[in-house]
Length: 85
Image (cartoon, rainbow, N blue to C red):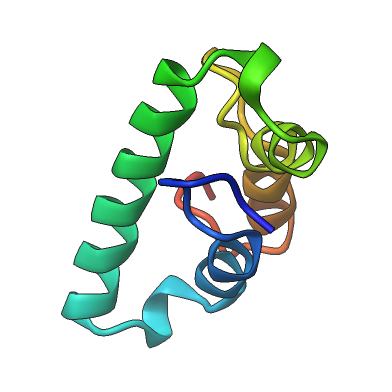
């Protein structure tokens, strides 16, 4: 379960696992909008107020407020599904 105002972990996983080449323009725009909103929410919400699940999700998705590549992006890149081929 995600914290209020945050993208659910199921939605994040679903968007990340579908290859970009199979997404419609609307899906690309939706992913970008939701990802940006979730990143902003992650930045504004202090870690002390995040649930354990949300902290784990932020770590996995790269929303830990620094520029390191997320584990999910690294995995996608390793199999050729990411932006950085």
